[in-house]
Image 1 (cartoon, rainbow, N blue to C red):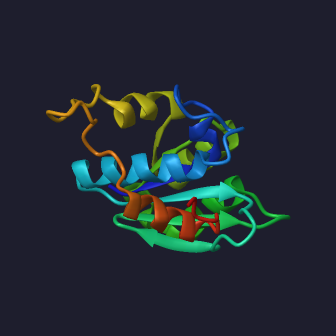
Image 2 (tube, rainbow, N blue to C red; image 1 turned 135 degrees about the horizontal axis):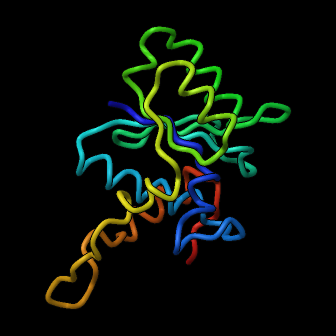
Length: 157
């Protein structure tokens, strides 16, 4: 069952990501990528506004990422997607803590899960380290360059 995720709403529920962090979207995308690979599911995550130079839409593994431009919002994009799905909405799970989004999902027949509850699934048990103490799943310098390119951030020298 694919997920439709309210990205900034989810970040606001994360224990180790802050909405004030300029890298918050990148960090969430990386976590979602690993999670979706592990559970063998797919998702679309919607974010309000995009940074300068960032792509409006891209795919990363099992994750479709969409930045919604003003005057629209991620909430509206999720609700529109549910309307487009029509009778197929029951095959999707909506992740948000926004009451209007969750109500629209219920009315469309989709499953719903609150952001705080989803965070518990997403974070899961603590990562174990390798023999050098480096956490599994740590980013390589190649990974970092890739994400910086995707978000239009200059690479550090």
